[in-house]
Amino acid sequence: MDPVNSAYLDELRAAHFGELVGDLLFRRLCDRYPEHSSKLHELARLEASVGDLLEGVLARHRVEPEPTERVEALTHQLFDDLGDADWDAFLARLRDVVVPFVERFDRLHDAGPAEDRNTLRILRDHERALLRFLDAEIRREDGLQPVERVLAELAEVRFAGRQS
Ligand SMILES: [Fe+2]
Image (cartoon, rainbow, N blue to C red; front, side, top):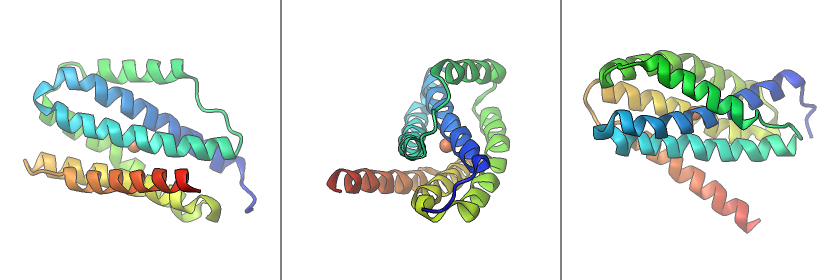
């Protein structure tokens, strides 16, 4: 096994935390943007699935996830910060949040230990898929396809995990 440093484990833990917040936030936003709820539901499913995957990796490294109260507190704050932003304003704001994460997960994938490479690739790809979704949605196009591709891959990983 490669030596794993604590900065890497902190990044993993933060990434897992982000997925849990994303899952909860997208589910809550279904009520705020009911006409877009089917898309938000898919994004929540993506975040929850990546969160599950990361949870397994954290457990393997014996790292405790962030407590649920912190997930709920940050989600609540983000939800309130959005105020009465309309769908377009929401997309633009989410895009500003996602862009640095794309860069961060790209770096994490490139620098992470070989044993976690598969998970880190999915983590990287899901954030890129989210950005592509947002860019398409801002152009009034359907951007769910890249999201569905990552979800299909996550289902395969889960299936393979059950078989081994
Ligand atoms: Fe995510």
